[in-house]
Image 1: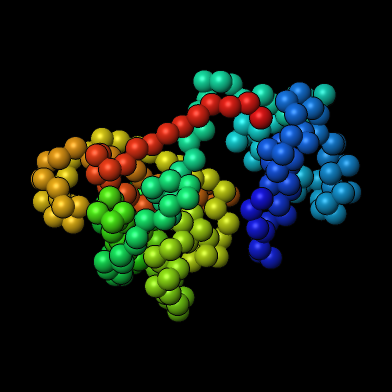
Image 2: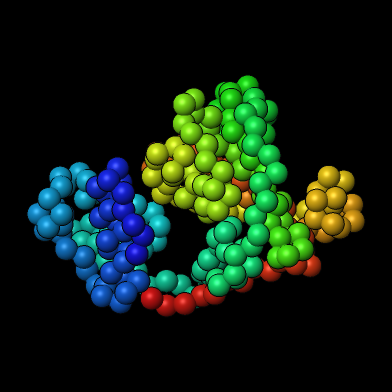
Amino acid sequence: MKPMSSFTPAYYRLAEDIKNKIESGELRPGDIIPSEVQLAKKHQVSRMTIRQGISLLVKEGFIKSIQGKGSFITAPPMDTLMLKFSDNKLLGENKNAKVDLLSVNVIPADKTISYKLNVVLGTKVLKLIQLLSDPDPVAIDTRFLPYLKGVPILENELKYAAFPDLVSQFTQLISVQNTLEISASVLSDEEAKLLEAMTGQPALCIEQIICAADDVPMGWSKMICRNDRFTIKAISQTI
């Protein structure tokens, strides 16, 4: 269960509560969830808040709403794969990569950063680069966050927090969507030097874009991984 902070929106807490019941087996595919009135009374929130929480669950595929009948827990299709990815568990669930923070800078957003973060060209953003090793270099992780004047930058938080957690801590907003994109790449001269590999060697590029409830990007990361030291595994399962 994810810890909920004091500034977590009520609709998000509701959605997490229902998801926890689904994942624990308390709610099963085909079960109908309580009505808006019942949920509003139980959680002591407005019906509008309940609708927001339900809409989030529908968007994420946990429930299906049928007009005039209610909202039902959905059965996950077997052709839908679950990919559990955490950049601070890059080498496996029980292993932590060594993290070396190479640089932290405030830079003006270029065209790519402007597009990814949906900010005006030239807007100040925080850029940090770190190297992950085990003990040999595995990946270069480059992260971009909005620059917030006056917000302290703590090295331990930058180094050891998973990217979605770092974004939430730094922006003080709740991230509700993490888009992960995996593509093929080749190492540049600089990347090859850091990863102790050959220029042009095949690599994996893993990008994450973290968004708030209003779909506004809160952070973007780009991880370049050595293809011979990194694998990705996804599974399909029923609830």
